Image: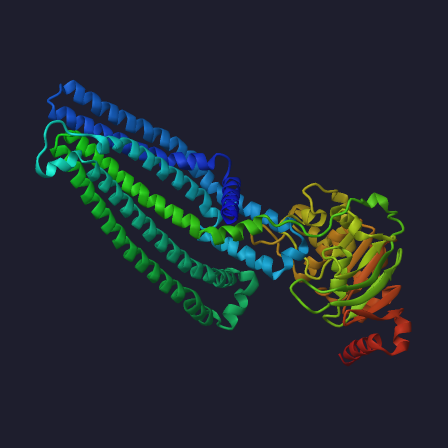
Length: 618
């Protein structure tokens, strides 16, 4: 009973989410679009019977014409109303794709950074997209609800209309086999036979649906491979050059053939075989039911229980009922088999932030005197067993220029992610002015920072919007930040200046920037925020030596009186900083000025001498 309640709650949650993704009243419009044609069928069957009855009884032409006119007008009216519902339904259906993409994107942007970076999240998102592409999960939930309601209503109409056939009795004395017409046992036997056939149809449909779903799941696994190669081949900016220079096309096509096309071909073959096998079973069941209906209705008619018109009516009603039962069985089977995919979708859409969100604001701080301290902090990334930081204790003082150096994988960037509270420490804690940073509201707390990350992104918006991260901006301030970053002359030379779209991928008159120019734009973005704490993570990695020298010479001017952390592999940049912290294996192993660290002849001196020797040889 508990499992049944949980199943019911999950299905109801799925229906609500489907309604949210597809739009208000979508299920109503879709159900009416399916249901009204079903009603039209029964009206046609009913009035066809009335017309035949009138003709066999030599009724006046006016009466026959009246029945025919009512039938035609009713069906026309139903189809007219159906088109009104279908129009609204199709508009919502086509727009639901974009609504779903918007909701998926919003969810990806609102979950914690730690969640968004995890393998489980990317795998779950991939499965949600596969479910949508294969019309499973929430994507199928709304349609299944509409089809179940439609076919259930159709069966109810058929049962009401056919009730007269079962209870109808012939008058007078019957002889031979005609005696069965008035036999309650005959009616009961017929009803049992119909129920058995329907039950067999339900079992067959359920088995077929389960097998088809298993095959579709296998096809879903090829989607990620297909998407990867398809995007990589078409992404001229990313890999088009390599594909052509190294003649990778035959390798890619062969890989796609073996890992996508051949697998899909086999899956489609098995699905068609399932459809043919169970289609034959369905055909046999339908034929047996049709024969039983003809026998029962014909025997009743011969006995005089009703006339020829009712024969046509009852046969049409029972035929529609059989088809509705079959469709209902199929949709119920789909609903049951869809549970696994529905759970995946609901897990994704129900993701909630896991980082503790405090209530303090930056108004609780004196922004002119901010000091950060790591208190015995250790950290390992989710889904891993190895610590990236080990018992890190470090103080970042007010107005200090701190350089962080170390070999790759020493924990430099991870330290910044913890400082910005993209992750929380596994052990230990971090304070700002003595207050645990977890006590602050996350959005408020991040106002403190202006950051250029190592793997920054430039958006396909205008230059000004990229700098201000907003459609509203201070034009003079944008120009000033571009000048500090060394990009003003390049932007002034653009046809639309600040309003020039970055990248020509989506805008015909867009401008593609070089890697160094993009890095300067990212630096300008960090400056525009005017945050009291500036963090530059490898800010000159893509710059030429001249531009790098300009950034170094302006470093004091750029950071002003603000606290600044400078992460770099280039030892020459450290000379501009007040203090240098050397990272190794997730710890700070050395601290001091450039000169004092060289005298220690430790890790920093080794890194410095290795680079100095390279430049000297060059």
